Structures are given as structure tokens and as C-alpha cells.
Length: 187
Image 1 (cartoon, one colour):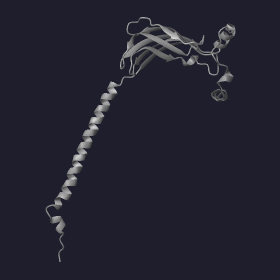
Image 2 (cartoon, one colour):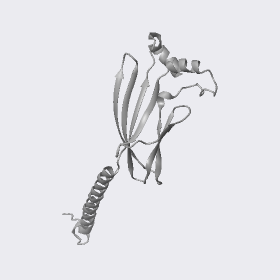
Image 3 (tube, one colour):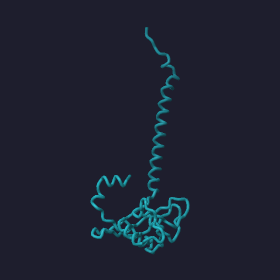
């Protein structure tokens, strides 16, 4: 006796095979379209996102343990308001655990202690666009540089400044370069 499956021969049964196949093809095409749109949006966004740029030129004098240089900075205003001042941190001037000198303190002792510390001094700031000097101020601790721009930079806009600087590096004793000294100073 031959058994036949009446379910497979019914005309509507083919729909159960065709409908999932069509749905799979349509969803695959939709997924590919969304992926292409996402990739093109990411490419457009990566082109649109501009980054700050820094170019540093440095001259070292090993005999005098000093350096001089310039830095061209292209800054982009990522805020939602215009700004006319840029701030830079002068990390080599940070003195961990040392409060700023009190007014009227012994300046000779201050000079000796400063000679033993690395130091950076900003000598000039100019607009890279027109080479005009810009006013700048370093805070009392010598750790923050404020550059006043001639015009406010709109959100999404950019400014280029050229900062000239010089500095010194203290002489390091051999015992200060050991791994033990390094670890102790870090703790």
C-alpha cells in the first residue's frame, strides 16, 4: 500500500514553503541596505569630525640641560558657545606636594629650589593665521597658560596659534635614576 502525504499535495501547502523563503530574502536585502547606509553615514561622519593638531619643533642643548621650541596648535571649538580664550596646562611646572611660594618669601631659596626642578617658560604666542602677537597670561603657580584670541571662535570653528617656549631640565644624580627611587617617588 502506497502512502501519500496529502498535506504536501494541497495547493495552499506550497505557501508554507514560499512565504518563509520570500521573507528571508526581503529581510536580507533590508539588512544589507541598512548596513550600507550605516557605513556611508560613518564615513561621512569621520570626514566631518576634525581633530586638533599639534606640531612641535624642539631644539635641545644637552650641555646646558635646556631646550627651546615652538608649537603650532590647531584647536577646534567643540562647545556650544563661542570662545575667545584657550587654556593650556604646563605640566612640567607642576610641583607635587609643594604649595606656591608665599609673597615676601626668601627669593634666594626659591631660585635654588627652582633650579632643581624642570621648568617651561612661554616666551611668545602668535596667531598662525596672520603672525600677529596674542596676549597671554600664566597663572601664579605657572601651571596654566591662557591665550587671548583676537576674535571669538564659533562652535565648530577653529583657531591656530603658535607658542614659543623655552625651559630647563635639572641634572639628575645617578641614585635618582634607580627603579627603587622611581617606585618610591610614585608612592
